[in-house]
Length: 280
Image (tube, rainbow, N blue to C red):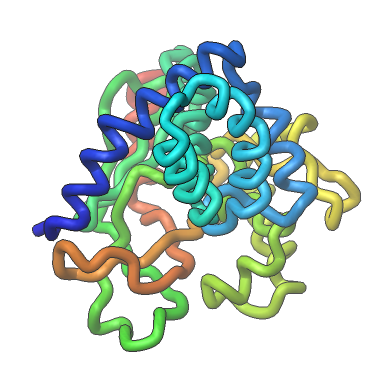
């Protein structure tokens, strides 16, 4: 399980950082995350395994109001240091943004758009807009990537976590062309190969997002709107940039890599949609 230091940090997040961020956000009337993501994409982030730019932009936006609403200077310094030293801090917000964007898309009759993807270390599941609250699941795959010193594939757990919601909105593996440095970090090849991942994801999505563009692709929008019909037709599974967790609790992340969503999830969902629409 989690050791004392982890539990202490969780308590600090709950009792100190969380309330302080809430107070700062209320004073500043909130932060518009979509333009912030747009800037991050032009600065080398893809919002799953690279959040350096967006984390820095967020800190720059938050810091003045955090200072105005925090009387304890020591606590303020600790909070600023925590956010500033965590290159992945923005991933927390990117996940919330993804959920906020996709939930309104859910429940459109006849729609074949994927509105959620998630995995728990055993199964991978998707939800589809036109198929109610049912999850379509299949065994999750093992990530392929690079490991931190002292760890190897023998230490890895099958893929897990809720962060695949960022791929659902066209970020992460779908926006890898914006973050060529990530290709090397996750063991996906040389930086020039990053664009290939984004182009391939364009074959299973309905459109490009004109608000989130990638300079390296002549400002093409990120591929958005995973369509289960296109996934099954092409046999191309969504690519997910992922952290690799240790198979034993309490150790945490031991590497980073790429994993594919199981095609079986999409095949099941397409059969269910066909049955619902009376298509044989």
